[in-house]
Length: 139
Image (cartoon, rainbow, N blue to C red; front, side, top):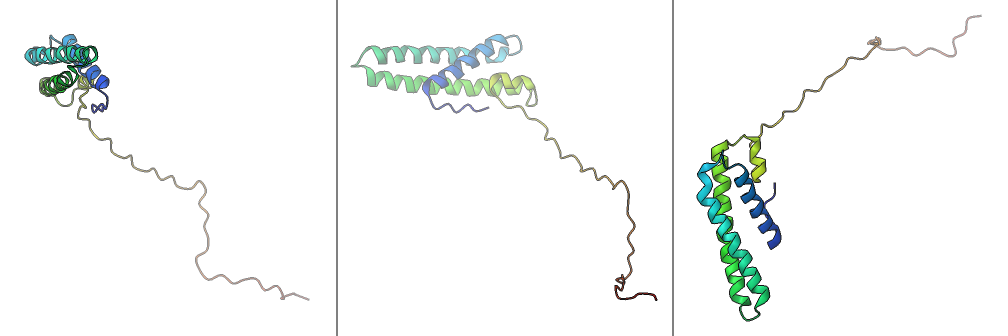
């Protein structure tokens, strides 16, 4: 489950998705309320800075810096949430996939090859073979 989004929109969408998943599972994850509020706050700051960036030409540099700072805080909060979810649910729980965390899965071993014997075993002589003599004729 790749989480390394190359675009800003993809990263923001991933963080929003994580926030909504935590809200859906609030009954099983009461420990992460502080991290979720930090994530939501940083996402709001990112969106506010993006609107300032597109609206005011003079504040574009400051808004870009604010986006980077708020996005960094949001990513850190998301990392802490994912770690807390993994700790709470367990490393092998399949619900981790809802939070973009890969659960530990057992590796399926290779199946042994089934060797089927031939249907009709042909017995061939193992001794030296004498070729038939084509010149030998009986008168």
